[in-house]
Amino acid sequence: MSTTMNRMVSREKAPILCIFGNDAAAMAQVIRAAPDLGRRLALAPRRAVHALAAFLASEAARRLNGAELIAELRTHHPRDLLHAALPGCDRRLYKTLNRAALPAWSLAEYAMVDALLRAEVGAVTSGTGPLTRARVATWHECLGEEPAFARWLAPFDDTADRAGLRVVLTWLRHAGLLTEPAPEGEAEPIAVSRAVVRMISQAKGPEAPFVVPEGWQQLRSARELLAMGRRLGNCLRATDRSAPQSIQHLLTGQVVFLHHAKAAVLAGLMPEPGGFWSVAVIQGRRNRPAPSWLVETLISALKASGIAVLPMGLDAALRASLDPLYWIDFEKLQEQVPDIEDGWV
Image (cartoon, rainbow, N blue to C red; front, side, top):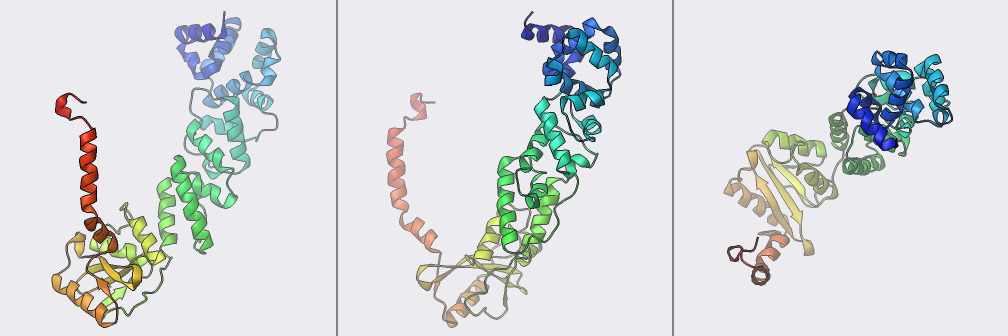
């Protein structure tokens, strides 16, 4: 009988053996030949199931014939079988596998858990929380990172999230702002995100290259910007998806943020080519429009100090100027695409 057929028979007639995954057929043959091992298996803890699966998948088991394999299983503790499958593995591996999800994993995945234990990855050594194949694979991938970053990246399962966090950590370290210790144990991603916000809040943007008008105050640090977002209830809050872009604009000087305390209004001034400036945004609480008199007063004060202020940003002005080109292109596109009413779906 083929291996595939053996698996089908074992899974249909004895679904409980599915906990052994790809080794279900091999365990079925063992239990047929030695029913007493089946009774022991029924009461086996999760760590024993994983240890047996590791042994069955190992080179040590492949060298044995049926009778020798049964003798090994009868006379050796599952912990010893695990060490036979992975010689020299960490002594904590057997106990740790009690947290591993079922069905059984591959031998390579058990070796990953062993490597994580040796690297003292807190999420594995903590002794708490479930271990899944996906999380172990993610943590193991992080072992390739430099030690200073590995524990920061470990809580994130998504590859894109880890790539982004790696860039942020690199920048924080270069700026001397990687001041918090990496999380210990099985940290949640949100704990890492909050730590990143605390650290990047220390960053400051350049000082405004003009005299800040009376009544206004420049927001220099990311902390001030995020705090203003919370106070005004707008898109500068740390929980808003547009906040990271505003932080980048602040730190690079692409936008100079000013706050009028009495009016509770935030203004963003953007440098334009040729030494001009434009008021990119000026809003009150919850993004409400600022009073017109305040806008006029701000622009007048800037002009009085020698700043040339454009009535709108160059990007918006260009979009308005080139709008006819977009319509020509759109009309051409419409001519090339059949109408839905003509049966095009």
